[in-house]
Image (tube, rainbow, N blue to C red; front, side, top):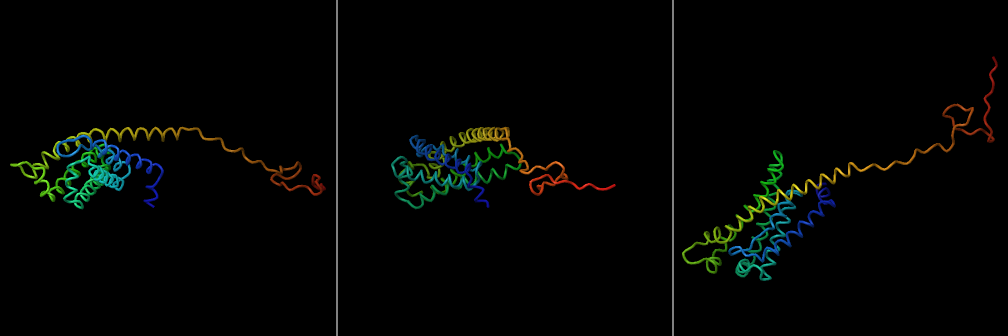
Length: 245
């Protein structure tokens, strides 16, 4: 029952639009370097999907985000991720998929939890949780590949953890955090306003006139009791016998 309610034309259309935004934003943002990694604006449609369609949709969009990251890296658009892929292919792919999916799922779950008290506070909480989860899991996963990072990216006198937190994820996280805090609630508000106007327009639409009531094909004949539509025998009006006084 729940799956049938989810796969409505409205939800499928929303999911398709958000998936297209995930792909386009990640490909476009991959051309903007920010430290060792690339800037990411993809968390905005992921948060919107989690808020509007639920944690499962957020997880799906987050996993799609991870797939695009891997594809862009293989195509040469992200040298940092490509280097990790070369030395740790399975772990890198798993990290890209898990961190994106977890960010989307966490945003959806947190929204459902906080929404009971305040809807817009829930949107803000979801928008802020996504970059925290995404960046936190990235740092934890990257530490498992510290041998490659330490050899090819960390300068002498610094540690892998310092490089990941400050040089790699720090500025990127700040940008993601601010953009999500501003854009996601704003877009959600606009979507809700449009949806309410559409619903109001449907309710205000004039109802079509119904068909005129069907009249009886055989009206009561004069001289017959009310409600008796039986035809008189021989096609003549039935005569009521006179009663003697």
